[in-house]
Image (cartoon, rainbow, N blue to C red):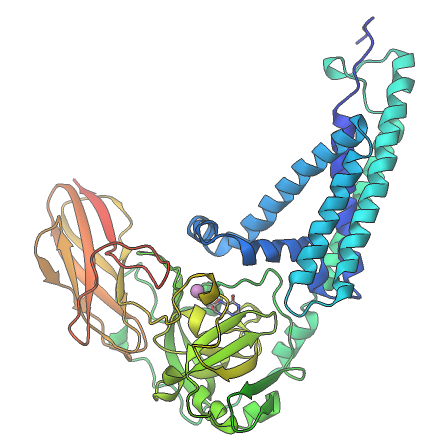
Length: 520
Ligand SMILES: Nc1nc2c(c(=O)[nH]1)N[C@H]1C(S)=C(S)[C@@H](COP(=O)(O)O)O[C@H]1N2
Ligand SMILES: [Mo]
């Protein structure tokens, strides 16, 4: 195509310059973080800060919308946002230098602040962000300069690209392409080295767990109802929900693991893996639930946990009178406050090392986590636990309680319809089934209500223990029409589930799960 008019500057060049510069900077940041710490990676430091500082409403919306994929959504969202800002930086650098460079420097500043804000950060954690910004600025200036000179070269040749814009010069394309390839390669290598789980996985693969002195009683036949589509009594490890603030999974090994116990104790103690394994272990089925689990949600699972009673471990240090809170901290600085009463009252609160017969999966807290029957995960289930401070509720707050969630988090009585999926079914027998839970109290009854009528009893599977969920089934003689099916549970103390809907914050959702069916 030829044209007699002089071509406009191509906006694509500066945009690409900005995006490539940002990519190069981020890749440099990953590489620079290798000798410092995975927490110092600018991208992950900023991501973690977003997680830690986002308003409750945003966090809830993210969990609600993306569930266990919330981390992937965050990474993609951040990537998109960075790309847009970087394109703007490129455009600004082209039109009004050095405004684009300054914008990239500001980016670096955000990385520095975020990296220093991570738990346990020292000043060197700022370096990768500084290096990232420097690399970003240099690449931006080189590419924008090439765009600018290219504009004149191409104009003299009177070649015109799409929309009458000057085409990108060969030199620009080669430089931008080369930098991109290098950035992707270095970024991938950097990420691999930072998120190096090899040592942890090898450690886990070698691990032989001890036998429990008190094994979990076998699961009787009657605990499982023979109904397709009902949630299995035991949740497989790879199907178990995962909720945590860790954008990079802490990579610990048994040899390096320590639990420091201090605070209001008779004597401070440091426990090693061998110390822990020398203690008698028990095995228990416990149904873990997340406080963010909305009515009908799936942030709940039941596993067979192997571990040492937390009370035995606390007794090594000796709790001083007056202390009522165990503040536990994970390797990545997440904190959790558990009432000492729940650890000492005889329930099976475990410092767990095994899940369904295997060592804990890395995402579920390898090598050691807490499991406390009856309490939501945010006040009980610290994964990658490394520190216990015995203290008081009047003196300490934990990660979620400082963000407005309730200090006490007993799991609320709840029930869920698992099958059949909403939709159209022929008139006649329709088997409705699901799960109900009231950890550490026990589910006594489950009832079903059709179209707001009478509550009718459902059949219940046998109770394994008060700490595990219970399957239920209701055989419905369905007549043609549109119907609403609701479920409620009644606990061992005779209390029915709260019918009024309340969202998860600040202490767990209430309300009844319901499904709509069209019977033909
Ligand atoms: N280190 C750490 N432990 C944690 C969390 C966390 O963010 N970091 N989240 C808690 C929450 S809110 C829940 S519900 C459970 C979930 O445990 P799971 O991922 O093994 O299902 O872990 C708890 N332990
Ligand atoms: Mo949770």
